[in-house]
Length: 332
Image 1 (cartoon, rainbow, N blue to C red):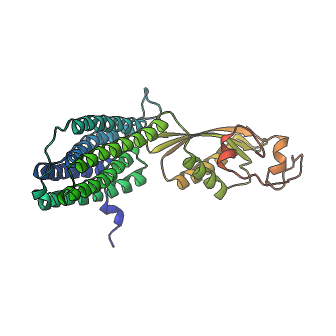
Image 2 (spheres, rainbow, N blue to C red):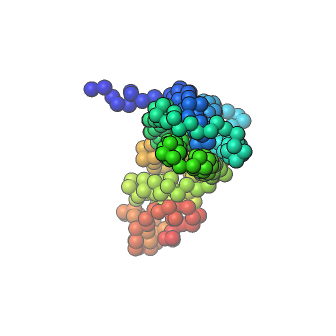
Image 3 (cartoon, one colour):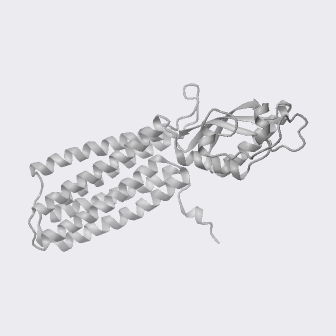
């Protein structure tokens, strides 16, 4: 049986190349729809399709740049470019939404031609179907490669599908005899959707650029540590996670028995890192600070037969997102 993974592109740029090719086809359909049927809604829709081409080209450039290896000037690599390009894409989309709103308010567009409704419906329906398929493909790629660029592109295309359906509703209403002001209102409503999508992407990419804590990642890390917990991992705290594109950089403090040799501590640390890499399913760079245990740790230390124990074991220490974050040893 053929491996299903071979069906899909094996790099983020592979997904974006498909998106770029599809964006040109969709743009062709929507431009034909606008010049055939006219109206503010179709103008907005074709403009958004042009934005899909521009953002996909920018996304491809960003993905290729983000994959460059780290160097002397960029010791953590170029992964932040993923978020930077996504932010620029969002600003471009927001600017286009503002310009489009101005054009619609001024009335500088082709009026609706109700007689061309059936032909227009064919072009617009084809564009919607193709856009939806590409959006789902990019969504799959964004989860596979943890790429904000692919996620931004997917969200943009899905919003394009939704707004195109709204345009069809408005077009149908005008064809059924409602006043043309309905079409203008639909066009302006689409501008709001486009602007809202840009705001959402900008908020997420901005959070990544300023290293805002991602609670989902910290929760997954806590679950992974709990799942593979070893008695010699006496305490883990002061954990910080930074995102560099699809890769992660994790700092933290881990407590080992004070009487261990450096070799023993190093081997235990490597075991922890191996488990976490397997659980997180993405490239991870770790920087751990190793602490020696103290008398306060005895009450939750699970090591059996410790000759240096100064307090009896009382309660197991559970690792949670909250306990991992704080810079304090012991029961939190």
